[in-house]
Amino acid sequence: MADRPSPSESSDPSPAQDAQSAPPGLGEQFGRTRNALVGLVSAHVNLARAEFAEIGGQIKRAAAFGGIALLLLFLGGMLVVIGTALFVGEVVFHSIGWGVLLGGELFVGSAVLLVLAIIDLGRGRAFSSFVVALGIGLAVTGVFAVDWAAVSRNNTGLPGGLVLAVLTGVVVFGLLGAALGAGFGRGAAAAGLVAGVVFGALLGALASAHLGLRVSVALGLAAMLLFWPICAAVLVFRHGIDMDKLKARFVPVQTIETTKETIEWVREQMPLGRKS
Image (cartoon, rainbow, N blue to C red; front, side, top):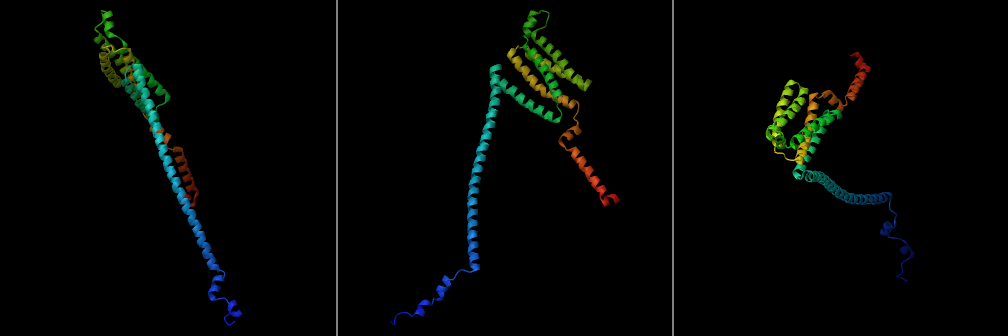
């Protein structure tokens, strides 16, 4: 009986128990809420960083694969174009070298024509230059296709094959050079005549060997592809380049002028502008 605690002793809690059982205050609740919110936001940020890092890796992987695919498509296109040129040269002219020569002239000539089109090469000039180049190509083909030795043998009154071929080349290409240079004046016509005579003499000397019809056609195509951009350039620069027209195509002249007029009008409407 003496060892039993009195009712007053058992019912009174200690100070430590009061502190533990007391509800948290407003500041403590706010701190806990803030820490929980910061932890939640940090978790979301870390998750977003991880996902963006993974997405970035996938983007890099896709970009690398896409770049390789584009490179392969480019190489495949180049292979088809170059292979076609070589195949045509082998099948038609029995030599890959003709495919290289004609294909190279076609690509370079097309690039020159595109540059001239940027400057001032219209459809009419492009067609006219093509007609002139076609005429030169046909003349070259005709000179090389003829068996000049056989012609001289069958016609005893004619000189030998070499002389006959050289004379024909001189006459044909001399007249052609003079005609091309006539549009630039007498001096240019004389220069064209001299260049045509020299060119015709060289072609005639080569044509006297009678290389055959296939080689003659190949040389004619080579001459046409060579002279087409040259004739186009002559037509463009003969008439002169209108720099004002070229500037108007690439500079917003009307917008600039309208803006200047608007600025002047605004200045006139302002009081200071009217006083001055």
